[in-house]
Length: 166
Image (cartoon, rainbow, N blue to C red; front, side):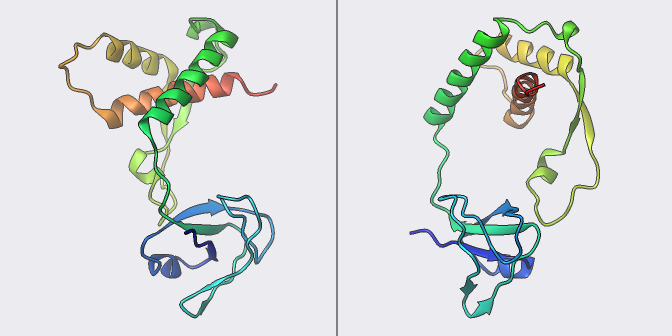
């Protein structure tokens, strides 16, 4: 069962135990686009609290979604196969018009209770070096998921950036 509601007040959001927020901006005050169906769901009330939406709003849905590693692995395989088809089996970083990019602290990126205070800077060459080192690690070596996945995610964002329409 999925419950779809809108709210503009973080206190109301906190009172909805068991629900997860997804930021949505539908461009119209008083409405909400369901992240599940893509349909406008309008205003709703929960536990007698009237909810009014305006500007950037949020939809909540019961936590029924899961991230399946097999699905993620397959999706990455499909995307990397396509990237290899488009860009070749290597991307020469010295030929790219970009090297540095903006980053956001990982913890801050998922803390929707406040706006991030600062940005960092990442480097494509550093990401490539870290990914190369990860690929050469021995099976028993320590893998720091938060660190290594951040470099992989940055490399994937680079591929997405290279594929932007110009």
